[in-house]
Amino acid sequence: MKITRQKHAKKHLGFFRNNFGVREPYQILLDGTFCQAALRGRIQLREQLPRYLMGETQLCTTRCVLKELEMLGKDLYGAKLIAQKFQVRNCPHFKNSVSGSECLLSMVEEGNPHHYFVATQDQNLSVKVKKQPGVPLMFIIQNTIVLDKPSPKTITFVKSVQSGQLVSAHDKQNIQQLKEEQGLVKNLDQRRRKKRKKISGPNPLSCLKKKKKVQDSKSPASEKKRKRKRIRNRSTSKVLSEKQNAEQ
Image (tube, helix red, strand yellow):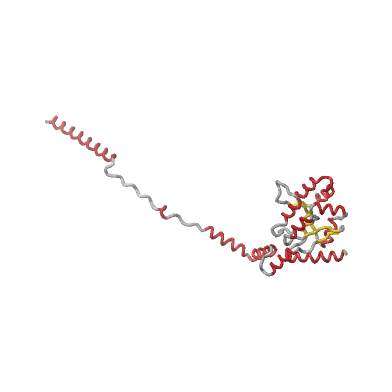
């Protein structure tokens, strides 16, 4: 039975590796139900998961899962101690925590970019995870760990990608890497920067010289100057006439 289980796991891992870029170390998100089942079955997760998947693994959880286990109290105290030993991944629920199932579902949405595995015993969460293409699902049956086969949603997604109708997230990353290696991304950025750097010249109307104001000949200042000249002329004429009378 153990050999057949590993064969199935190897087959399923090859499917996710070839179509979604899943690589070691395998990142496995565990919730409280999976930890509780492992505790009851006396399963050493850190030892048995790498053996079953035949590769390096990283066991992780979220803050919402830990808070949920704290709220549930003594019944899941052992599961909480197990979950606290795992790596804690940042979830988008910093201020207001949500249920563990809702949190794990949010971590694998939008194409599962971090290639998470979801390990859970929650049936409702399993159904929702199967609707997300490219998410490996794990659970425990009869004290044994099982990697579920790819869901129908995942298989139809792969077929549509192969037929050219869709582009997977893994293929998008590969295309982006090829562009960066060949320098296409840099050239495009440089062209965009050059286009942005073009600055239009100044407005020709703003460069025109201001016309100098011509002073009017009939300004009040010129009239005052003329009056002063006339007054000086009159005073000199009076002085000359007085001198002539004195001489006579």
